[in-house]
Image 1 (tube, rainbow, N blue to C red):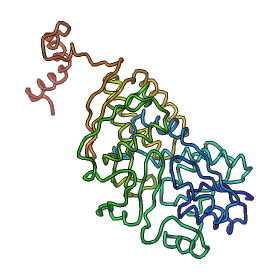
Image 2 (image 1 turned 135 degrees about the horizontal axis):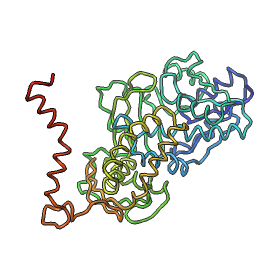
Image 3 (image 1 turned 180 degrees about the vertical axis):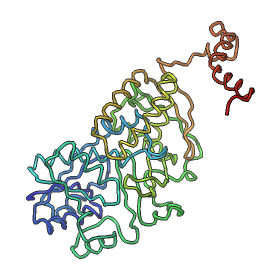
Image 4 (image 1 turned 60 degrees about the vertical axis):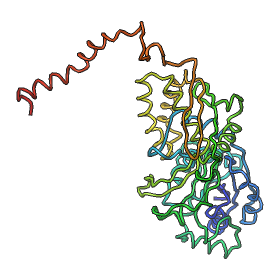
Length: 401
C-alpha cells in the first residue's frame, strides 16, 4: 500500500493511528474528517493531523447530506435501538464512510483506515459501507493489528511520539459528537451503577436546573420531513440546530442505557439527543393523527428492524432500501404540525393538527351523533368474539384439554 486515507476525528485512536500507519506500512497517510456537526472540534484538526504525520487533511462538510439523507429517514422510520437509543453514532458512520470512499478515490489511494476498536460496533459500520461502495479498497483497522491493548497504552504511545490529544488519563471517556447527538463511553462510565458527573454533559442542562417556566415549540412537517419551527420554514441543518438549542435548555434528550453491541457484549452508553428527541415525539404524534391503524401498527414492527439495520452497519443494503420505499409510502399524508410543551426534561404534547387528519370529532364524540349507530357494534362483537365463544363452549363441556 502506497497511500491510505484515514477517517480522522482528532481523538485518541485516530491521532495515534496516523503515526502507527506510517511506521507499520511505510506509506503516505491522508486524513479525512467529515463535518457532521462537531462544531468547534474541527478547528484544531488541521495542525494536529499534520503534526501527527498526515500528508494532508480533508475537512468535508457533509452536514446537509447527513441530516437530510441519513437522520431524517431514520426519523421517518421511527427507529430506536432497544427502545432508547436514537442511533446518533450509528447513523453517522455510513455518512462518514461514504465521504471517506470518495476522498480515497479522488486521491487514488490503495486503502482506507479507521480508528474503531475491535470490541465495538463502528468497525462493522465503517467496513460494511466501504465493502458496499468501494469493494476494491483494502481496509486497515489498527486496533486489530497493533500491540496497543488499552487506552493507557495508547496514551503512552502518544506521549512517546509527541502526538497532541484531546483527552487525558484523568478524564478518559470517549466522546462522539455530531449535529444529531453526543455520546459518552468508557472511563468512569464503565461502571453501570455510577451516575454520570453533572459537568460531563454538553448539549443539555440538568433537568433540575432548567427554567421554572415551560416553553412551547411547534414543529411543522411535510410528508414526514420536518420543515419548520414555530412557523418559520428553514433548512434541515438550521432546523435541527435550533431544536437542539431549545430542547437543550430544558434538559430534554438525555439517555443512559446498557445496550447489546453487535459483537456480543453489553456496553453502557450515555447520550444527548435534544433536537432529535423533539422530532421523534412530534413525528409520532402526527402519525397517530394521519395513519390508519393497520399501517401504523405494521410500521412499528418495521421500525425495530430498521433500527437493527442501522445499528449493525447495514445501511447500504437492499433491505434498508426496500424498507425506505414502504416507509416513504406511509409518509404521504404525514403533513401538519405538532405543538410540544417542554418543562424540566419532559415533553408534553400540547396539540396537533393536519389537513389529512383521520380523526373525526363527529365519530369520536361521547355526545349525540348521527353517523355512528351503536347498535351495529352488536354484530361486530358477535363475529369478532366467535372463536372465543367456541373455545368457551368446549371448555365448559370438558372437551378441551
